[in-house]
Structure formats: C-alpha cells, structure tokens
Image (cartoon, rainbow, N blue to C red; front, top):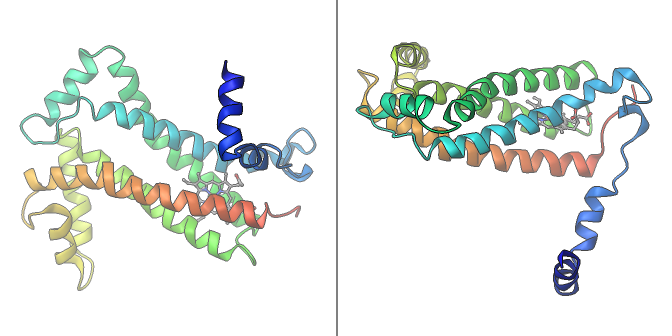
Length: 224
Ligand code: HEM
C-alpha cells in the first residue's frame, strides 16, 4: 500500500533523487567517532538541531493553553502545569530544553572556533551562526517573561534597563520592545509573546536553512 503510494508520487514528481541526495551523502571518516573518538565534538551541531526541534514541537503544544494577557497568563500556565494531561511534561521539556539548547549551541560554537572551522571558505556560515546565536539568546529572553510570575517580571525589567542604557538607540529600542517606556506591562507581554512565537522562530528557521545549505555545499571542514 505504502509502496504503491510512493511509486504513484515518484512517477509524477521524481522524488527519489531528492532524498537519495540527502540519505546517501557519505560522512567523512574524520567526523566518525567509531574511527576517532575525538570526533564526538562534531555531534554538537546535530544535537543543537535536535533540541531545537523539541523546542518548536513542545512550544506549539504550549500555545494551545497559554493565554498571552496579563490577567490570564500566569493562571493559564498554572492550569497547564497542574490540570492538563501531560502538560507538566511538555512544559518541562520546553523549560529545560531552553537551557540545554543554549549549552549545545555553545559547545558547537566552541568546536567550530577551536578547530578554526570558521576560516576560508566558511566565513559566511560563521556569520550566519553568529546571527543564529543572537536569535537563540533572544528566544530565551522573551520566553522568560511569558509565565508572568515575579521572577519573569523582574528579570525582564533588568533586561529592558540594560537595553535602555545603550547609547542613542537605547530608549527607542526599549519602547519598541516593551510597548511602554515606563513599566513592564500588558503591552510588553503581548509584544514578547509575538516576538517569541512568530518573529524569532521564523528568523531561526530561515537562518538554519541557510546554515544547512552552506554546510552541504561546502562540506564539513578538516581533518585538522
Ligand atoms: C540552531 C543553532 C545551530 C545549529 C542547529 C547548527 C548546526 C550545525 C551542524 C549540524 C553543523 C555540521 C557540523 C557539526 O555538527 O559540527 C554545523 C556546522 C557549522 N556551524 Fe553550526 N549550528 C548552529 C549554530 C551555530 C553557531 C552559533 C555558529 C557560530 C557562531 C555556527 C557555525 C558553524 C560553522 C562555521 C560550521 C561549519 C563547520 C565545519 O565545516 O567544520 N553554528 N552547524
């Protein structure tokens, strides 16, 4: 049945070469830990991707219960955590995943840095990586406010004070992010929510797409 469906689609769209190109791509020996144990350092990019997928999936389920307004945000999280089936697990995955993904990305960046993998011809992919790095940090920052508890509120106040202290662009940037230059309030929550679930994930997916296309075109660096 599945075979026939596959053949039906393949006859019309010629999809076999597409997945063969991905699946049959040979991995060079120097990145295979079975040959050289130290090659495990190459796994961190893939692990970052894996945790990112978990973040996106768990985040999608969280939005089915989360209510982005100051009257209901905290209680919607409380309800999700305590009443919804598997809610605690899904929230826990997103909560801990947010830290794990930063750690993995950092280890990946260290690997690229200390092996000099950012050098010619991979300079552009390093720059793409730096952009990804900032998008990831911003995801952590904006997500932190969403539970709307005391910790979220005061952490965000500190963040916005730091933004405000930037020369020239500080005040307008804070107003843009917070919606209100004086307090972390209703506008701030809806803006952070929109940035956290729409703007940044869209930017992240686009950047990761470019990152992977470049890796495929240039091949993996090394051996040292
Ligand atoms: C969402 C975050 C990221 C993901 C999912 C990701 C994924 C990957 C993967 C799967 C590879 C293949 C080799 C490997 O796994 O080590 C790679 C290579 C690379 N990454 Fe990333 N990466 C991310 C962030 C970054 C950051 C923050 C930087 C640097 C600032 C960076 C710079 C590079 C460079 C230069 C390469 C090519 C390395 C080589 O050819 O040896 N990446 N990335």
